[in-house]
Length: 604
Image 1 (tube, helix red, strand yellow):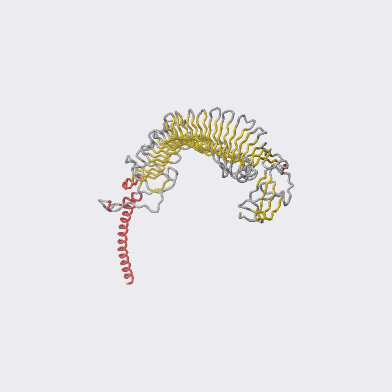
Image 2: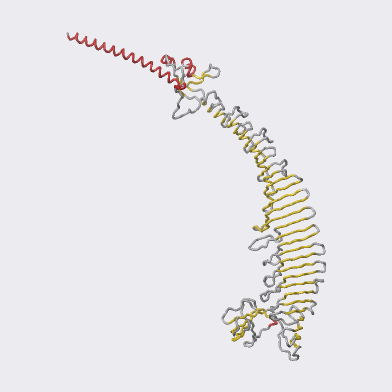
């Protein structure tokens, strides 16, 4: 502030911020020198406030039309002072105060007064001044002994005290030298404390301004007690609700050392009170390490993290969530294992473990029932409710390395055998299979109907059977089928390239004349039809008839191959017809000639 004369307005308030002024007066020409000024408050407008009834009042200042200074200054509640008429010079008196002052130096004095409302008698080296502060010895009449030093703003900087009723407790404190808002309690920076039980502590406090009346927030604390326990604690330097957990704690007990680290609980984090987020324990039985996040979810406490444990017999690493272990790797009595769990029931594990032995890889479903086993003996089983649904064997269910699938009743539905067979089954009856298998040999592909009857066979020798188990022919279709095969076209290999000893058919018409077409009803199903009798055709055209393996019983006719016989028979018949036509033409000519002659005779 430049040296000049300023208009200044002074007001007294009951609160450090806000409110209505209790008293106000304006000074038109306040001279400043290097930022200092002196004002006789009440000289313009007398102040009649009762300071005794107002322990805390605050003075606000404003320069001209500028906004008021942001910070209000608390006016200490001391007895009203006046000029003592009985003593003057080096020894001065005032109500409740005796002052010995060097006339040559206003800053060198010793005073004895009744102090403030909470200090009792105060012995001062010199009055408080805005530059050097003061040294005091207080509390004589109350039994409390307190040696301290105050800063220029009246806040304590150094304190060493002993209080009655504290059983020999002595406190040494170093206080925050920074300016505090008026009315704020003095916040310790460093405090050393001893007690009658042998306990001792050394504490460093947060130097930042705290809300009025709040407990001083510790930064570092070391302490021990008569039982031999000792600890070092570090606290969160940020403002926390009173009573919040420490940031870091290192303690020793008769069982061993402990290290705890806590989360700062800032930014809206809802952490569980008194739950450290990192824990390290070492005692006579085991070493333990916990790395977790312990938080509030809804109305419940949850923990997620990692836990490590090591003792003389076992060691393991556990990963947990929702307060329950989910993954666990460890050794027990020299044997390793790994488990994946949910809700405390094992879902998957590489054993031996409390669930299984032998090094199996186990997966479990809801309720802890095995759903998959990769056995140490090379087996694979997929199960439900303890019944095997699918497995690669040998296993307790099957031998030979088969891959087996089962339905909900435990019946085999599919088997991939170690011999190369594939079977698809239902209710123990094979519906489809690639063999060899207990049903068929040779690698056939077989399909069955619901009654177990064979419906399709793709034989390993290349033959196909449709609707029948017989496969002596390249393609065999079911006899007495209610439906017939249907196609847009069917062609037969017939190139000269594949034939030799080619000869025209002879006597075809005669053989056709020996065939007898018939109508009939099928024995199975009663279907009415027309055709030939294979046994009869075999007597005339044996080339188109197929026989059973005994070579005697006829079973089928190749009607398409009869076409060649019919063609040649028609050609023979056509020759006969043409011969008769020529003969008829000659006879017609003779008749015509005879008729002409008769007509001429009649004319004569």
